[in-house]
Image 1 (cartoon, rainbow, N blue to C red):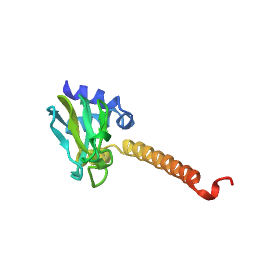
Image 2 (image 1 turned 180 degrees about the vertical axis):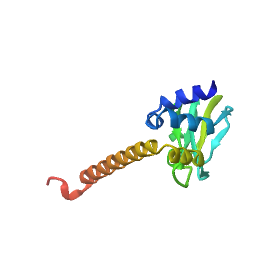
Image 3 (image 1 turned 90 degrees about the vertical axis):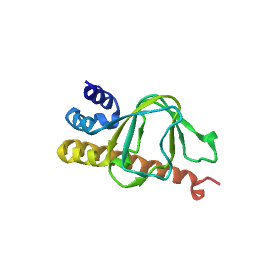
Image 4 (image 1 turned 45 degrees about the vertical axis):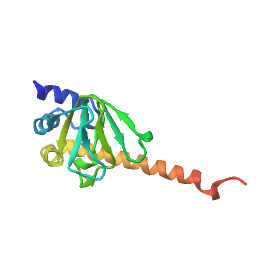
Length: 155
């Protein structure tokens, strides 16, 4: 029953929904459900990232700069940490600490990559989504540069 609950939960999230139910079943079987106590650190800035976490219940404090807690952000259910760590080596860009008793789903990179090999249609849909995001980011950067370029301003 817990697997069905995890599948339904992942299916409610846009990034995972596009993979399809059979692929999500495989991910859920290989995923790890973790209970995190209040004040417990899920991971620290600079640590190697070998997978992703999805908040299922509870909330977390996200801190990119330990010297400035004023910039902390609070996130809750449905938040995905480490999306790119599912595909490539990376390090955690921030520290994440539980604000209350919380549950997360941990998906390892190895499990995710095996799922993509097993479900090539899911891999294609994911590749298309990543390409769209990259294209959108490139357009936004081009627009921002154009606005900041002093040669484009009227005298």
